[in-house]
Length: 314
Length: 308
Image 1 (spheres, one colour):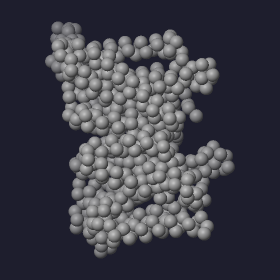
Image 2: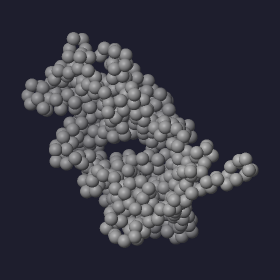
Image 3: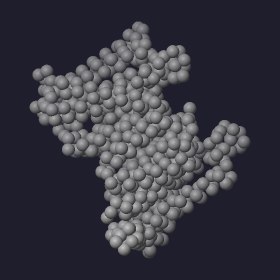
Image 4: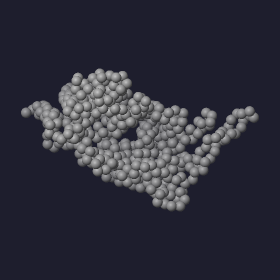
Protein backbone atom coordinates (compact mmCIF):
# COMPACT_ATOMS: atom_id res chain seq x y z
CA UNK A 1 0.00 0.00 0.00
CA UNK A 2 1.31 3.44 -0.83
CA UNK A 3 1.29 6.24 1.70
CA UNK A 4 -1.53 8.04 -0.15
CA UNK A 5 -3.74 4.95 -0.02
CA UNK A 6 -2.93 4.51 3.65
CA UNK A 7 -3.92 8.07 4.50
CA UNK A 8 -7.10 7.83 2.43
CA UNK A 9 -7.93 4.65 4.31
CA UNK A 10 -7.27 6.41 7.60
CA UNK A 11 -9.53 9.36 6.73
CA UNK A 12 -12.42 7.21 5.51
CA UNK A 13 -11.95 4.95 8.53
CA UNK A 14 -12.25 7.92 10.92
CA UNK A 15 -15.50 9.00 9.22
CA UNK A 16 -16.88 5.45 9.26
CA UNK A 17 -15.97 5.16 12.95
CA UNK A 18 -17.82 8.41 13.73
CA UNK A 19 -20.88 7.16 11.81
CA UNK A 20 -20.78 3.85 13.67
CA UNK A 21 -20.41 5.65 17.01
CA UNK A 22 -23.96 6.98 16.61
CA UNK A 23 -25.38 3.46 16.78
CA UNK A 24 -23.04 2.15 19.48
CA UNK A 25 -22.65 4.93 22.04
CA UNK A 26 -25.31 5.96 24.59
CA UNK A 27 -27.37 9.11 23.89
CA UNK A 28 -25.33 11.34 26.20
CA UNK A 29 -22.09 10.69 24.31
CA UNK A 30 -23.83 10.96 20.95
CA UNK A 31 -24.92 14.47 21.95
CA UNK A 32 -21.35 15.27 22.99
CA UNK A 33 -19.96 13.90 19.76
CA UNK A 34 -22.13 16.14 17.57
CA UNK A 35 -20.80 19.14 19.51
CA UNK A 36 -17.26 17.76 19.24
CA UNK A 37 -17.53 17.39 15.45
CA UNK A 38 -18.67 21.00 15.03
CA UNK A 39 -15.82 22.22 17.24
CA UNK A 40 -13.45 19.95 15.30
CA UNK A 41 -14.39 21.88 12.13
CA UNK A 42 -13.23 25.01 13.95
CA UNK A 43 -10.01 23.23 14.92
CA UNK A 44 -9.47 22.05 11.33
CA UNK A 45 -9.80 25.64 10.15
CA UNK A 46 -7.33 26.79 12.77
CA UNK A 47 -4.92 23.97 11.99
CA UNK A 48 -4.85 24.97 8.33
CA UNK A 49 -3.34 28.32 9.27
CA UNK A 50 -1.30 27.36 12.34
CA UNK A 51 -0.24 23.81 11.53
CA UNK A 52 0.33 24.08 7.79
CA UNK A 53 1.12 27.74 7.14
CA UNK A 54 2.89 28.40 10.45
CA UNK A 55 0.92 31.53 11.36
CA UNK A 56 -0.12 31.69 15.02
CA UNK A 57 -3.32 33.72 15.27
CA UNK A 58 -4.91 34.67 18.59
CA UNK A 59 -8.02 36.10 16.96
CA UNK A 60 -9.86 33.20 15.37
CA UNK A 61 -12.86 33.71 17.66
CA UNK A 62 -13.63 36.69 15.43
CA UNK A 63 -14.08 34.41 12.40
CA UNK A 64 -16.08 31.88 14.42
CA UNK A 65 -18.31 34.71 15.67
CA UNK A 66 -18.61 36.20 12.17
CA UNK A 67 -20.12 32.93 10.96
CA UNK A 68 -22.25 32.55 14.06
CA UNK A 69 -23.66 36.08 14.01
CA UNK A 70 -23.89 36.20 10.20
CA UNK A 71 -26.27 33.26 10.39
CA UNK A 72 -27.94 34.16 13.67
CA UNK A 73 -28.61 37.84 13.00
CA UNK A 74 -29.85 37.30 9.46
CA UNK A 75 -32.36 34.78 10.82
CA UNK A 76 -33.27 36.91 13.83
CA UNK A 77 -33.52 40.32 12.16
CA UNK A 78 -34.33 39.59 8.53
CA UNK A 79 -36.27 36.32 8.91
CA UNK A 80 -34.09 34.45 6.42
CA UNK A 81 -34.52 30.68 6.32
CA UNK A 82 -31.65 28.42 7.34
CA UNK A 83 -29.98 27.78 3.96
CA UNK A 84 -29.54 31.41 2.80
CA UNK A 85 -28.61 32.37 6.39
CA UNK A 86 -25.84 29.78 6.32
CA UNK A 87 -24.53 31.39 3.13
CA UNK A 88 -24.68 34.83 4.78
CA UNK A 89 -22.70 33.38 7.71
CA UNK A 90 -20.05 31.94 5.40
CA UNK A 91 -19.89 35.16 3.37
CA UNK A 92 -19.41 37.32 6.45
CA UNK A 93 -16.60 35.07 7.71
CA UNK A 94 -14.99 35.25 4.26
CA UNK A 95 -15.14 39.05 4.15
CA UNK A 96 -13.95 39.49 7.74
CA UNK A 97 -11.03 37.10 7.27
CA UNK A 98 -10.04 38.79 3.99
CA UNK A 99 -9.95 42.22 5.63
CA UNK A 100 -8.17 41.03 8.78
CA UNK A 101 -5.76 38.93 6.74
CA UNK A 102 -4.92 41.87 4.49
CA UNK A 103 -4.15 44.11 7.48
CA UNK A 104 -2.57 41.59 9.85
CA UNK A 105 -0.26 40.00 7.29
CA UNK A 106 1.70 43.23 7.12
CA UNK A 107 3.23 41.98 10.37
CA UNK A 108 4.74 38.68 11.40
CA UNK A 109 5.62 36.67 14.48
CA UNK A 110 4.66 38.23 17.81
CA UNK A 111 3.11 41.28 16.15
CA UNK A 112 0.84 39.07 14.05
CA UNK A 113 -0.49 37.43 17.20
CA UNK A 114 -1.11 40.75 18.89
CA UNK A 115 -2.77 42.34 15.84
CA UNK A 116 -5.16 39.43 15.43
CA UNK A 117 -5.82 39.49 19.18
CA UNK A 118 -6.60 43.22 19.03
CA UNK A 119 -8.96 42.87 16.05
CA UNK A 120 -10.78 40.01 17.75
CA UNK A 121 -11.07 42.08 20.93
CA UNK A 122 -12.48 45.01 18.91
CA UNK A 123 -14.95 42.58 17.31
CA UNK A 124 -16.03 41.25 20.71
CA UNK A 125 -16.54 44.78 22.03
CA UNK A 126 -18.52 45.68 18.89
CA UNK A 127 -20.89 42.80 19.59
CA UNK A 128 -21.34 44.14 23.13
CA UNK A 129 -21.75 47.72 21.86
CA UNK A 130 -24.63 46.75 19.57
CA UNK A 131 -26.22 44.88 22.45
CA UNK A 132 -29.74 45.94 21.41
CA UNK A 133 -29.42 43.67 18.34
CA UNK A 134 -26.99 41.01 19.54
CA UNK A 135 -28.18 40.84 23.19
CA UNK A 136 -24.48 40.95 24.24
CA UNK A 137 -23.21 38.34 26.66
CA UNK A 138 -26.67 36.96 27.24
CA UNK A 139 -27.00 36.04 23.56
CA UNK A 140 -30.16 34.95 21.78
CA UNK A 141 -31.84 31.67 21.00
CA UNK A 142 -32.67 30.66 17.44
CA UNK A 143 -36.24 29.28 17.54
CA UNK A 144 -36.55 25.55 17.02
CA UNK A 145 -39.06 26.01 14.17
CA UNK A 146 -36.49 27.91 12.08
CA UNK A 147 -33.74 25.32 12.47
CA UNK A 148 -34.68 23.20 9.47
CA UNK A 149 -33.01 22.75 6.11
CA UNK A 150 -34.22 20.88 2.99
CA UNK A 151 -37.01 19.32 5.02
CA UNK A 152 -34.76 18.04 7.82
CA UNK A 153 -35.38 19.20 11.38
CA UNK A 154 -31.86 20.06 12.62
CA UNK A 155 -32.87 20.26 16.28
CA UNK A 156 -33.59 16.54 16.25
CA UNK A 157 -30.73 14.46 17.75
CA UNK A 158 -30.33 12.09 14.81
CA UNK A 159 -30.39 14.66 11.99
CA UNK A 160 -28.18 16.96 14.03
CA UNK A 161 -25.58 14.22 14.45
CA UNK A 162 -25.47 13.39 10.76
CA UNK A 163 -25.56 17.04 9.70
CA UNK A 164 -22.52 17.64 11.92
CA UNK A 165 -20.86 14.50 10.53
CA UNK A 166 -21.53 15.62 6.95
CA UNK A 167 -20.05 19.08 7.49
CA UNK A 168 -17.11 17.63 9.41
CA UNK A 169 -16.38 15.06 6.67
CA UNK A 170 -16.46 17.72 3.95
CA UNK A 171 -13.99 19.96 5.78
CA UNK A 172 -11.84 17.05 6.95
CA UNK A 173 -11.44 15.52 3.47
CA UNK A 174 -11.17 18.88 1.70
CA UNK A 175 -8.35 20.09 3.96
CA UNK A 176 -6.60 16.70 3.81
CA UNK A 177 -6.70 16.96 0.02
CA UNK A 178 -5.74 20.63 -0.05
CA UNK A 179 -2.57 20.15 1.98
CA UNK A 180 -1.40 17.47 -0.47
CA UNK A 181 -2.00 19.77 -3.45
CA UNK A 182 0.74 22.06 -4.86
CA UNK A 183 -0.93 24.99 -3.06
CA UNK A 184 -0.77 23.19 0.29
CA UNK A 185 2.82 22.12 -0.34
CA UNK A 186 3.75 25.74 -0.95
CA UNK A 187 2.14 26.72 2.37
CA UNK A 188 4.23 24.07 4.14
CA UNK A 189 7.30 25.46 2.39
CA UNK A 190 6.40 28.92 3.71
CA UNK A 191 6.03 27.48 7.21
CA UNK A 192 9.43 25.83 7.03
CA UNK A 193 11.32 28.73 5.47
CA UNK A 194 9.52 31.75 4.14
CA UNK A 195 12.64 33.44 2.75
CA UNK A 196 13.52 30.40 0.69
CA UNK A 197 9.97 30.02 -0.64
CA UNK A 198 10.08 33.65 -1.70
CA UNK A 199 13.46 33.19 -3.33
CA UNK A 200 12.07 30.27 -5.32
CA UNK A 201 9.59 32.69 -6.85
CA UNK A 202 6.44 32.08 -4.80
CA UNK A 203 4.33 35.08 -3.90
CA UNK A 204 4.31 34.27 -0.18
CA UNK A 205 2.08 37.19 0.82
CA UNK A 206 -0.77 36.16 -1.49
CA UNK A 207 -0.38 32.52 -0.45
CA UNK A 208 -0.59 33.50 3.22
CA UNK A 209 -3.62 35.70 2.54
CA UNK A 210 -5.38 32.80 0.82
CA UNK A 211 -4.52 30.59 3.81
CA UNK A 212 -6.03 33.13 6.24
CA UNK A 213 -9.20 33.37 4.14
CA UNK A 214 -9.62 29.59 3.85
CA UNK A 215 -8.90 29.10 7.54
CA UNK A 216 -11.22 31.95 8.55
CA UNK A 217 -14.06 30.73 6.36
CA UNK A 218 -13.84 27.18 7.73
CA UNK A 219 -13.89 28.64 11.26
CA UNK A 220 -16.90 30.74 10.25
CA UNK A 221 -18.65 27.61 8.95
CA UNK A 222 -18.09 26.04 12.36
CA UNK A 223 -19.60 29.11 14.05
CA UNK A 224 -22.62 29.13 11.75
CA UNK A 225 -23.12 25.37 12.15
CA UNK A 226 -22.87 25.72 15.94
CA UNK A 227 -25.59 28.40 15.97
CA UNK A 228 -27.81 26.42 13.60
CA UNK A 229 -27.45 23.00 15.24
CA UNK A 230 -27.51 24.09 18.88
CA UNK A 231 -29.79 27.12 18.45
CA UNK A 232 -27.78 29.70 20.35
CA UNK A 233 -25.53 32.65 19.55
CA UNK A 234 -23.76 34.64 22.30
CA UNK A 235 -20.83 37.02 22.77
CA UNK A 236 -18.97 34.42 24.87
CA UNK A 237 -17.96 32.75 21.62
CA UNK A 238 -16.14 35.92 20.55
CA UNK A 239 -13.97 36.19 23.68
CA UNK A 240 -10.21 35.62 23.80
CA UNK A 241 -10.88 32.25 25.41
CA UNK A 242 -12.48 31.01 22.19
CA UNK A 243 -9.39 32.10 20.27
CA UNK A 244 -7.19 30.16 22.67
CA UNK A 245 -9.32 26.99 22.56
CA UNK A 246 -8.55 26.04 18.92
CA UNK A 247 -4.85 26.65 19.61
CA UNK A 248 -5.12 24.31 22.55
CA UNK A 249 -6.99 21.62 20.61
CA UNK A 250 -4.59 21.73 17.68
CA UNK A 251 -1.50 21.67 19.88
CA UNK A 252 -2.91 18.84 21.94
CA UNK A 253 -3.93 16.78 18.91
CA UNK A 254 -0.91 17.62 16.81
CA UNK A 255 -0.37 20.70 14.67
CA UNK A 256 0.11 19.99 10.98
CA UNK A 257 -1.58 16.58 11.07
CA UNK A 258 -4.96 15.91 9.48
CA UNK A 259 -6.51 13.98 12.36
CA UNK A 260 -4.87 16.07 15.11
CA UNK A 261 -7.70 18.61 15.42
CA UNK A 262 -10.36 15.92 15.99
CA UNK A 263 -8.21 14.06 18.53
CA UNK A 264 -7.45 17.31 20.34
CA UNK A 265 -11.10 18.33 20.61
CA UNK A 266 -12.22 14.89 21.83
CA UNK A 267 -9.45 14.75 24.43
CA UNK A 268 -10.01 18.30 25.70
CA UNK A 269 -13.81 18.01 25.66
CA UNK A 270 -13.83 14.95 27.87
CA UNK A 271 -11.04 16.28 30.06
CA UNK A 272 -13.12 19.39 30.81
CA UNK A 273 -16.30 17.34 31.06
CA UNK A 274 -14.76 15.07 33.68
CA UNK A 275 -12.95 17.78 35.62
CA UNK A 276 -15.93 20.16 35.74
CA UNK A 277 -17.80 17.49 37.69
CA UNK A 278 -15.00 17.67 40.29
CA UNK A 279 -14.23 21.39 40.48
CA UNK A 280 -15.60 24.66 39.11
CA UNK A 281 -12.03 25.75 38.33
CA UNK A 282 -11.85 23.34 35.41
CA UNK A 283 -9.69 25.64 33.30
CA UNK A 284 -6.91 24.75 35.76
CA UNK A 285 -6.75 21.36 34.05
CA UNK A 286 -6.46 23.08 30.66
CA UNK A 287 -3.56 25.15 31.99
CA UNK A 288 -1.72 22.15 33.41
CA UNK A 289 -2.23 20.22 30.15
CA UNK A 290 -0.82 23.12 28.13
CA UNK A 291 2.31 23.36 30.27
CA UNK A 292 2.86 19.59 30.25
CA UNK A 293 2.39 19.52 26.47
CA UNK A 294 4.99 22.17 25.78
CA UNK A 295 7.39 20.37 28.09
CA UNK A 296 6.94 16.76 27.03
CA UNK A 297 4.99 16.50 23.75
CA UNK A 298 5.51 19.66 21.73
CA UNK A 299 4.18 17.91 18.61
CA UNK A 300 0.86 16.86 20.15
CA UNK A 301 -0.67 13.38 20.37
CA UNK A 302 -0.90 12.69 16.62
CA UNK A 303 2.45 14.40 16.03
CA UNK A 304 4.22 12.17 18.56
CA UNK A 305 2.50 9.11 17.04
CA UNK A 306 3.75 10.13 13.61
CA UNK A 307 7.26 10.68 14.90
CA UNK A 308 7.48 7.37 16.72
CA UNK A 309 5.20 4.82 15.04
CA UNK A 310 3.37 5.77 11.85
CA UNK A 311 5.86 7.68 9.74
CA UNK A 312 3.41 7.76 6.81
CA UNK A 313 0.66 9.54 8.69
CA UNK A 314 -0.63 12.65 6.84
CA UNK B 1 -18.96 71.21 36.19
CA UNK B 2 -17.63 73.12 33.19
CA UNK B 3 -15.50 71.61 30.49
CA UNK B 4 -12.17 72.91 31.88
CA UNK B 5 -12.38 71.47 35.41
CA UNK B 6 -13.86 68.30 33.97
CA UNK B 7 -10.84 67.88 31.70
CA UNK B 8 -8.45 68.50 34.61
CA UNK B 9 -10.22 65.84 36.66
CA UNK B 10 -10.10 63.42 33.72
CA UNK B 11 -6.39 63.97 33.20
CA UNK B 12 -5.65 63.46 36.91
CA UNK B 13 -7.50 60.13 36.82
CA UNK B 14 -5.61 59.42 33.61
CA UNK B 15 -2.30 60.13 35.32
CA UNK B 16 -3.08 57.52 37.99
CA UNK B 17 -3.91 54.97 35.26
CA UNK B 18 -0.71 55.93 33.43
CA UNK B 19 1.41 55.46 36.58
CA UNK B 20 0.11 51.94 37.20
CA UNK B 21 0.30 51.09 33.52
CA UNK B 22 3.91 52.30 33.29
CA UNK B 23 4.92 49.92 36.11
CA UNK B 24 3.05 46.92 34.67
CA UNK B 25 4.15 47.52 31.09
CA UNK B 26 7.75 48.11 32.19
CA UNK B 27 7.82 44.57 33.64
CA UNK B 28 6.62 43.15 30.34
CA UNK B 29 9.00 45.34 28.37
CA UNK B 30 12.10 44.34 30.36
CA UNK B 31 11.27 40.65 30.00
CA UNK B 32 10.78 41.05 26.26
CA UNK B 33 13.83 43.26 25.87
CA UNK B 34 16.30 41.02 27.68
CA UNK B 35 14.85 37.55 27.03
CA UNK B 36 12.93 38.10 23.76
CA UNK B 37 9.94 36.16 25.07
CA UNK B 38 6.30 37.21 25.41
CA UNK B 39 4.90 36.52 28.85
CA UNK B 40 1.15 36.02 28.55
CA UNK B 41 0.91 35.23 32.27
CA UNK B 42 2.00 38.78 33.15
CA UNK B 43 -1.56 39.86 34.00
CA UNK B 44 -1.84 36.97 36.45
CA UNK B 45 1.33 38.04 38.27
CA UNK B 46 -0.33 41.43 38.60
CA UNK B 47 -3.45 39.80 40.00
CA UNK B 48 -1.35 37.72 42.41
CA UNK B 49 0.26 40.93 43.68
CA UNK B 50 -3.16 42.36 44.51
CA UNK B 51 -4.38 39.14 46.13
CA UNK B 52 -1.25 38.80 48.27
CA UNK B 53 -1.62 42.47 49.27
CA UNK B 54 -5.16 41.75 50.46
CA UNK B 55 -3.96 38.69 52.32
CA UNK B 56 -1.11 40.55 54.07
CA UNK B 57 -3.27 43.53 55.06
CA UNK B 58 -6.04 41.30 56.39
CA UNK B 59 -3.55 39.38 58.57
CA UNK B 60 -1.92 42.50 60.00
CA UNK B 61 -4.04 44.51 62.44
CA UNK B 62 -3.61 48.10 63.55
CA UNK B 63 -3.34 51.11 61.30
CA UNK B 64 -3.95 50.33 57.60
CA UNK B 65 -0.59 51.91 56.72
CA UNK B 66 1.35 49.12 58.53
CA UNK B 67 -0.32 46.41 56.47
CA UNK B 68 0.07 48.40 53.29
CA UNK B 69 3.81 48.99 53.72
CA UNK B 70 4.31 45.30 54.54
CA UNK B 71 2.29 44.34 51.45
CA UNK B 72 4.34 46.67 49.28
CA UNK B 73 7.44 44.77 50.40
CA UNK B 74 6.15 41.19 50.58
CA UNK B 75 3.85 40.92 47.52
CA UNK B 76 6.40 41.82 44.81
CA UNK B 77 9.01 39.61 46.50
CA UNK B 78 6.74 36.55 46.65
CA UNK B 79 5.45 37.08 43.11
CA UNK B 80 8.98 37.62 41.80
CA UNK B 81 10.19 34.39 43.44
CA UNK B 82 7.24 32.47 42.02
CA UNK B 83 7.92 33.82 38.54
CA UNK B 84 11.62 32.97 38.82
CA UNK B 85 10.68 29.43 39.86
CA UNK B 86 8.28 29.15 36.90
CA UNK B 87 11.05 30.32 34.60
CA UNK B 88 13.47 27.74 35.94
CA UNK B 89 10.96 24.87 35.90
CA UNK B 90 9.23 25.54 32.59
CA UNK B 91 10.68 28.20 30.31
CA UNK B 92 14.30 27.17 30.74
CA UNK B 93 13.35 23.57 29.90
CA UNK B 94 11.85 24.57 26.55
CA UNK B 95 14.83 26.77 25.76
CA UNK B 96 12.72 29.97 25.39
CA UNK B 97 11.41 28.83 22.00
CA UNK B 98 9.09 31.78 21.11
CA UNK B 99 5.93 29.83 20.15
CA UNK B 100 6.23 27.27 22.91
CA UNK B 101 6.88 30.00 25.48
CA UNK B 102 3.61 31.66 24.56
CA UNK B 103 1.70 28.39 24.89
CA UNK B 104 3.39 27.60 28.19
CA UNK B 105 2.64 31.04 29.61
CA UNK B 106 -1.00 30.74 28.47
CA UNK B 107 -1.04 27.52 30.49
CA UNK B 108 0.60 29.27 33.43
CA UNK B 109 -2.02 32.01 33.16
CA UNK B 110 -4.86 29.51 33.63
CA UNK B 111 -3.02 27.69 36.42
CA UNK B 112 -2.49 30.87 38.47
CA UNK B 113 -5.94 32.26 37.75
CA UNK B 114 -7.85 29.08 38.55
CA UNK B 115 -5.77 28.26 41.62
CA UNK B 116 -6.62 31.72 42.93
CA UNK B 117 -10.29 31.05 42.18
CA UNK B 118 -10.11 27.84 44.21
CA UNK B 119 -8.35 29.39 47.21
CA UNK B 120 -9.19 33.11 47.25
CA UNK B 121 -12.68 32.64 45.81
CA UNK B 122 -14.71 34.54 43.23
CA UNK B 123 -15.39 37.64 45.39
CA UNK B 124 -13.81 41.06 44.94
CA UNK B 125 -12.11 42.12 48.19
CA UNK B 126 -11.09 45.65 49.18
CA UNK B 127 -7.86 46.86 50.79
CA UNK B 128 -7.85 49.94 53.03
CA UNK B 129 -5.67 52.77 51.69
CA UNK B 130 -3.00 53.90 54.21
CA UNK B 131 -4.26 57.48 53.98
CA UNK B 132 -7.10 58.92 51.98
CA UNK B 133 -7.68 62.64 52.48
CA UNK B 134 -9.79 64.33 49.88
CA UNK B 135 -8.00 67.37 48.47
CA UNK B 136 -10.13 69.97 46.71
CA UNK B 137 -8.48 71.55 43.69
CA UNK B 138 -8.83 75.17 42.60
CA UNK B 139 -9.75 76.33 39.12
CA UNK B 140 -9.07 79.74 37.58
CA UNK B 141 -11.93 81.44 35.90
CA UNK B 142 -12.49 84.80 34.23
CA UNK B 143 -15.67 86.07 35.89
CA UNK B 144 -17.41 89.42 36.54
CA UNK B 145 -14.78 90.63 38.98
CA UNK B 146 -11.88 89.71 36.69
CA UNK B 147 -9.64 86.70 37.15
CA UNK B 148 -10.65 84.65 40.16
CA UNK B 149 -9.85 81.38 41.83
CA UNK B 150 -12.89 79.14 42.32
CA UNK B 151 -13.33 75.74 43.94
CA UNK B 152 -15.71 73.83 41.67
CA UNK B 153 -17.78 71.18 43.38
CA UNK B 154 -16.48 67.69 42.64
CA UNK B 155 -13.04 68.80 41.48
CA UNK B 156 -10.85 66.91 43.90
CA UNK B 157 -8.36 64.09 44.20
CA UNK B 158 -7.44 61.90 47.13
CA UNK B 159 -4.00 62.10 48.69
CA UNK B 160 -3.60 58.38 48.05
CA UNK B 161 -3.94 58.83 44.28
CA UNK B 162 -1.26 61.53 44.35
CA UNK B 163 0.94 59.12 46.32
CA UNK B 164 0.45 56.45 43.61
CA UNK B 165 1.77 58.82 40.95
CA UNK B 166 4.77 59.86 43.07
CA UNK B 167 5.57 56.27 44.04
CA UNK B 168 5.47 55.08 40.43
CA UNK B 169 7.81 57.86 39.35
CA UNK B 170 10.21 57.05 42.20
CA UNK B 171 10.25 53.30 41.45
CA UNK B 172 10.77 53.81 37.73
CA UNK B 173 13.60 56.31 38.36
CA UNK B 174 15.31 53.82 40.68
CA UNK B 175 14.92 51.13 38.05
CA UNK B 176 16.39 53.43 35.43
CA UNK B 177 19.42 54.14 37.66
CA UNK B 178 19.92 50.43 38.35
CA UNK B 179 19.82 49.53 34.66
CA UNK B 180 22.07 52.32 33.44
CA UNK B 181 24.44 52.84 36.38
CA UNK B 182 24.94 49.58 38.29
CA UNK B 183 26.78 46.35 37.64
CA UNK B 184 23.49 44.40 37.70
CA UNK B 185 22.22 46.67 34.95
CA UNK B 186 25.40 46.17 32.97
CA UNK B 187 24.97 42.41 33.13
CA UNK B 188 21.36 42.75 32.04
CA UNK B 189 22.27 44.95 29.12
CA UNK B 190 25.10 42.67 28.07
CA UNK B 191 22.73 39.67 28.06
CA UNK B 192 20.20 41.66 26.06
CA UNK B 193 22.76 42.70 23.45
CA UNK B 194 24.31 39.30 22.82
CA UNK B 195 23.65 36.45 25.21
CA UNK B 196 26.27 34.14 23.70
CA UNK B 197 29.09 36.65 24.00
CA UNK B 198 27.91 37.50 27.50
CA UNK B 199 28.04 33.81 28.40
CA UNK B 200 31.57 33.60 26.98
CA UNK B 201 32.58 36.47 29.28
CA UNK B 202 31.32 34.59 32.31
CA UNK B 203 27.81 36.04 32.66
CA UNK B 204 25.51 33.31 34.04
CA UNK B 205 22.89 33.88 31.34
CA UNK B 206 20.41 31.31 32.66
CA UNK B 207 20.40 32.95 36.09
CA UNK B 208 20.10 36.42 34.57
CA UNK B 209 17.04 35.25 32.60
CA UNK B 210 15.52 33.73 35.72
CA UNK B 211 15.86 36.91 37.77
CA UNK B 212 14.83 39.19 34.92
CA UNK B 213 11.63 37.15 34.60
CA UNK B 214 11.15 37.51 38.35
CA UNK B 215 11.85 41.25 38.19
CA UNK B 216 9.25 41.71 35.43
CA UNK B 217 6.60 39.89 37.45
CA UNK B 218 7.62 41.81 40.59
CA UNK B 219 7.06 45.14 38.81
CA UNK B 220 3.56 44.04 37.83
CA UNK B 221 2.93 43.09 41.46
CA UNK B 222 4.12 46.54 42.66
CA UNK B 223 1.63 48.14 40.28
CA UNK B 224 -1.11 45.90 41.62
CA UNK B 225 -0.34 46.64 45.29
CA UNK B 226 -0.54 50.35 44.49
CA UNK B 227 -3.84 49.98 42.65
CA UNK B 228 -5.60 47.63 45.05
CA UNK B 229 -6.79 50.34 47.51
CA UNK B 230 -8.49 52.07 44.54
CA UNK B 231 -9.74 48.97 42.77
CA UNK B 232 -10.59 45.74 44.61
CA UNK B 233 -8.68 42.46 44.38
CA UNK B 234 -10.40 39.91 42.13
CA UNK B 235 -9.20 36.73 40.45
CA UNK B 236 -10.00 38.01 36.95
CA UNK B 237 -8.45 41.47 37.41
CA UNK B 238 -5.33 40.57 35.41
CA UNK B 239 -7.08 40.48 32.08
CA UNK B 240 -7.38 44.20 31.29
CA UNK B 241 -3.89 45.19 32.54
CA UNK B 242 -2.40 42.41 30.38
CA UNK B 243 -4.04 43.76 27.23
CA UNK B 244 -3.20 47.36 28.12
CA UNK B 245 0.40 46.47 28.96
CA UNK B 246 0.74 44.60 25.67
CA UNK B 247 -0.62 47.61 23.79
CA UNK B 248 1.75 49.91 25.65
CA UNK B 249 4.83 47.82 25.01
CA UNK B 250 4.01 47.47 21.32
CA UNK B 251 3.10 51.12 20.74
CA UNK B 252 6.29 52.15 22.52
CA UNK B 253 8.34 49.78 20.40
CA UNK B 254 9.18 46.24 21.48
CA UNK B 255 12.16 46.29 23.81
CA UNK B 256 12.47 50.06 24.10
CA UNK B 257 12.15 51.11 27.76
CA UNK B 258 11.78 54.90 27.20
CA UNK B 259 9.21 54.10 24.48
CA UNK B 260 7.23 52.05 26.99
CA UNK B 261 7.10 54.99 29.44
CA UNK B 262 6.01 57.46 26.77
CA UNK B 263 3.35 55.06 25.48
CA UNK B 264 2.10 54.40 29.04
CA UNK B 265 1.62 58.13 29.61
CA UNK B 266 -0.09 58.56 26.23
CA UNK B 267 -2.41 55.59 26.69
CA UNK B 268 -3.16 56.14 30.38
CA UNK B 269 -4.02 59.80 29.84
CA UNK B 270 -6.13 59.22 26.73
CA UNK B 271 -7.89 56.31 28.43
CA UNK B 272 -8.81 58.59 31.32
CA UNK B 273 -9.94 61.42 29.05
CA UNK B 274 -11.81 59.30 26.48
CA UNK B 275 -13.71 57.26 29.04
CA UNK B 276 -14.91 60.42 30.81
CA UNK B 277 -16.32 61.94 27.63
CA UNK B 278 -17.40 58.87 25.61
CA UNK B 279 -19.02 55.49 26.26
CA UNK B 280 -16.33 53.21 27.77
CA UNK B 281 -17.10 50.37 25.31
CA UNK B 282 -16.81 52.68 22.31
CA UNK B 283 -13.57 54.09 23.75
CA UNK B 284 -12.16 50.58 24.06
CA UNK B 285 -13.21 49.65 20.52
CA UNK B 286 -11.49 52.75 19.12
CA UNK B 287 -8.37 52.16 21.25
CA UNK B 288 -7.94 48.52 20.21
CA UNK B 289 -8.52 49.34 16.53
CA UNK B 290 -5.99 52.18 16.67
CA UNK B 291 -3.42 49.86 18.21
CA UNK B 292 -4.03 47.17 15.60
CA UNK B 293 -3.65 49.76 12.84
CA UNK B 294 -0.49 51.27 14.33
CA UNK B 295 1.00 47.81 14.49
CA UNK B 296 -0.03 46.93 10.95
CA UNK B 297 1.41 50.11 9.46
CA UNK B 298 4.31 50.80 11.81
CA UNK B 299 5.23 47.37 13.21
CA UNK B 300 8.32 48.63 15.04
CA UNK B 301 6.24 50.95 17.27
CA UNK B 302 7.03 54.56 18.14
CA UNK B 303 10.62 54.27 19.36
CA UNK B 304 11.48 50.72 18.35
CA UNK B 305 13.90 49.56 15.72
CA UNK B 306 12.65 46.90 13.33
CA UNK B 307 13.33 43.39 14.63
CA UNK B 308 13.98 40.88 11.88
